[in-house]
Length: 556
Ligand code: ATP
Image 1 (cartoon, rainbow, N blue to C red):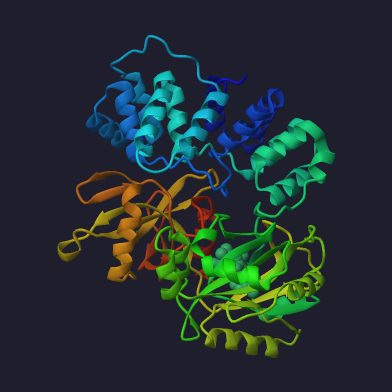
Image 2: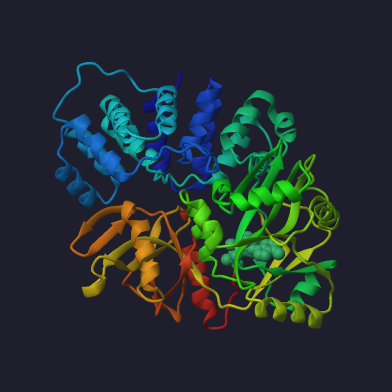
């Protein structure tokens, strides 16, 4: 049975390695030796910094406050000392390690933690609901801390707070599984795109090798990674690149993946979060008008007087857990469907042309439920006309799709090109903030932004304090409060959780921030609640956009 200390030793080694190849080799050697399937499953997830697959309905529901409390109870170190350590170390994991080192109570008996034990406790924590559940979680967590060595406390804390950041991304896990079980990386990746769970992929690979992975198929109620688009430099270029071209509006809304099978509807967001409960009227509409046994891809938009409302409104609906019925009246939604991946069986390998026929036959259109209009044309003037129409209707531009192409989950490819009217914006991680002055002193009114480097480190590039309405700031303050790691005067440090889309006048080189760049006149565009921290823009993109200002390089 795998002990937590063996896992932690791997983490501490992997964390220090910068070479991707070496990281892969270490992980691959480690997982190859794991005998138990459950241990293998858990190791893969934990290395990726997850306790459950991102789309799972299960979640630990552990915030920083709960960790502080569990540490205090298990070690006897007071809260203020713990907060000071967090400030000093700038990292919850390192602070927890130090706290456990300073433990004033020694436990007489503590059993060695195993991966299996952690899984049991995590499952128990995630199934707690309602009154008293926070208290029970604190007790369960403090029992884990009692059994932890200091370094184990470091990684336990990072794991439960989703801050593992070992620099072990999907690519490394894919290659490590491929190498450990002697299977081509492409086959491992395909298996992941249809299951969205590398833990399961690793277990299947271990049990049945290549054949087991090849037989994994898309199944209803397990989300499929979304196909993504590249930027079209120009309409002319798109026409040159794609021989059989179909044009659709690029709707200004939020991506949804709709599963309807076995009498049940499940809806996932772009991040593959389960948002079914926030969209009751859409669920009903699907049941009424869609043929059962399908997985569909589309966009949900909020409408008022026939025009799309800012995208923020859709996300407001997604986040809603209570009073959903009030929001149904306040923010009416429409769904535009544009693809189908499953129709009684997996059909992602059919060309778009045939998938479109299946989509049309599976959906009876209604006021709320539409199949996106599609025009097959290669005439740039006609495409321009459709583009103008889309902009006039309040949407973003057009999507140019290759009718001969398969649906390739999780890939940003040339088979879907987007052509938008707006300038390039950046999607940046919010890492800090500041309380406002005077009338706004109870509102967080400025936010510090960072991009990612290739190892997932966050590099600051600027602060945004304009572009917000008072209502935005009120909502954002509520949203960000639970993410406050610590404060000094007016200054706040957040744990990285949310992404802002920002516009700016210019990118400058600047020694002020560790990224080496600074945004001039940044302006808040919206909260990209549909993007995770890992999906934010990279320093490489910032550098590219910087170069483009001088007319060199190209975007995306
Ligand atoms: P963006 O900020 O431009 O939406 P993104 O990274 O979120 O970028 P891309 O894959 O680059 O997503 O662009 C495609 C996105 O456009 C899809 O994720 C989807 O939400 C949206 N979209 C709107 N209309 C369509 C359409 N007709 N076909 C495909 N995607 C569409």
